[in-house]
Length: 592
Image 1 (cartoon, rainbow, N blue to C red):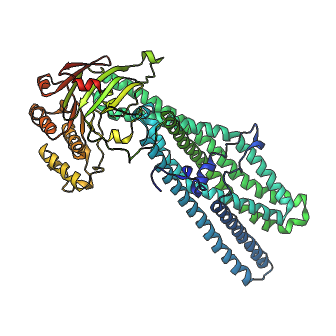
Image 2 (cartoon, helix red, strand yellow; image 1 turned 180 degrees about the vertical axis):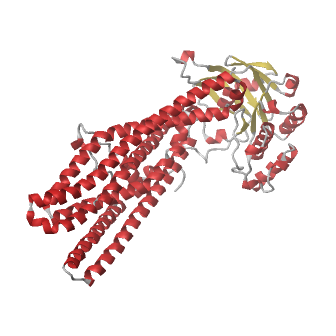
């Protein structure tokens, strides 16, 4: 299965794990005000043969578990009559072995299937996220992406075994209750009354339990963000006592909210747990104290009935123990599916075609031209498009083998222009043309393949992706040329620790990686800003001319005015508009 496929993308039936995970979203929490409308057992896609098979194993497990109690009771009666049955002993052992096998198979297979489905979900959603435009990525909060791709899977994975065991316990509980009915309908009625009261008690707190767990998740996310801010802003906090004091106060408030919500959840769950345990003992008490009064004829069977009722305690505890984990799992599954729906909505709005890997390569281009291009950032503070920051009337060209400098103040729109040029931002209006051929609003991959980049906010992966033997050789050579080869392992394909590098060394690695990709156009956003004067001079006077001589096209954002003479064209950006500062447009450029 490729990264871009998953259970939901296929025409065939969904996998077992996918069916089980999605069934969690169709099991709403039952509220006391309308308990009889609950669709607790209306699971989706139960026509899946494998799911039916797992349900069959659960039924078999419950049947064998009930058989264990039956033969225990039978042998107990014989012992009371000073008799012994080899058949009962052998049957007990057989039932016990079968029960253990079915229980183990059910939990192991269900967990494996769900983990496999989670693996497929992650692959599918990650593939969709990588197809989003940079604008879409920026529209999501960092927390939303982290939760959708990482955090929601941890609690879900941890709850699987407990929930599966809870389902098996529920099946066993049903079978055991019918066994009690077989022993004594009156005893079953008494225990049933206690059970109904217990269920009603649970319904009265289940909604509150779900609400407090959701509040706990929100509080936990807020505290996580606070702690991350404290780590990232350690320098600022250390330098400013007042800032540190106020930060600690906010962190204390976030921690207090999390404490209160989790304490409330624990209190409600403790109430559920205590009610379940109490109900188990009340069932046994009802049989011992009330049954002989209501039906003296059954007083000789009390011990056997009590034994059966006491065996209900284990399944009841298992079901109750899975309730909290069920709420956690359901919350996580809904979070994952909601995130995927939002990603799908973004892709649908983009109206982006599938990446056309077979599209005509553009590596031999002569001219890239932007004509009256406009792009506006989405800003939460901006009430309408008019007040959002925009770059507009972008009219400039990039000729193959040239060096183009772009200058401008902070916030003028330089990086935005680079991202539009590279096809990372979808333009709102205007045209981009390659040798006169128009580029779609959401550029195809063959256009984006023209560019290698080192943006100001570049990211370094832990290993050099896509580089074959030739690419790794180029990377090795450039790391040596940039005087940082000794910072990396002998075999570059195994990866490296980027955290051990200084800011300047990271930029050198990023440049070496971009050069190793050997793409026609190299975009460099303030690359020399963190380099020492000698390296800066080497970059402008030596490296840039070498790049141009090798046929590469350079687009460089810079503030180093002493080196402006290195450029063939110099554009200046101010308030989102670009003008030619030096150099000239060829007549051929304008016509194209």
